[in-house]
Length: 302
Image (cartoon, rainbow, N blue to C red):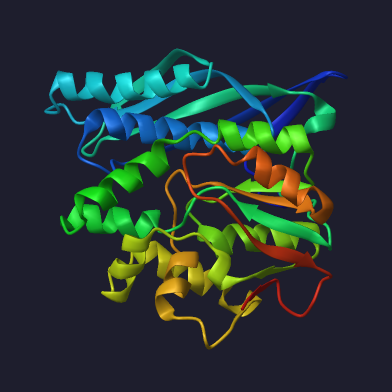
């Protein structure tokens, strides 16, 4: 709890530990099936961030009484199909009445106790690799306003619904020091948790960070979710951002992500191997920074 890790881990035997997490949220797209897929991928992600393999999931659902049953069925079908893609099982769940739809999962996975990857073990000299592009919160805000192009919408859906399983498998094969998934606190917020927990400073290279192009365009128009401002307010005393970096990039690196990618801290001599393992990823990925000895701030962006 002290390092705000992504999921809980409970050691059962010397060779087996249980990984458990829970997440759910309101719709981010109009299509109920796609919403179910995104919510499930997001819920599964915390287990992947710990290096675990999801095995069981329970639906968490809140629906208004006037929501058509075929819409409810589509949401649950989307979640079911994404969990199946993860080679896991939905074994039940619980539904309550609510004025606004909400859907997600409680996920249980397994891992060898010696293989657990935390967000608090980044080492000076490590490099940082991000496995999905940023800008999802901004795009979701634009989608709700009806001002996102068809290509932008498809890019957002493809990115959010993509499981982090492939990236997790790659990092576990290579062996890494630390990992967290980038969700509601944005890149800066989750990096701050990694830096604080690891007692290091993290440095990002702004021009290396993958950002969805349409999100940058929307950010220039001022289409920014309120969560981005809250994220920046929370970490403003712990981050130094070069004055030469455009505001739209600053907005994107504080943007709250839905089902974002993994931020992986890996030894520099393993980085090329990990990047090669990621080469078949369907989402853009990149080496975006490095881990430094602790300085007077937690995050540097240049």
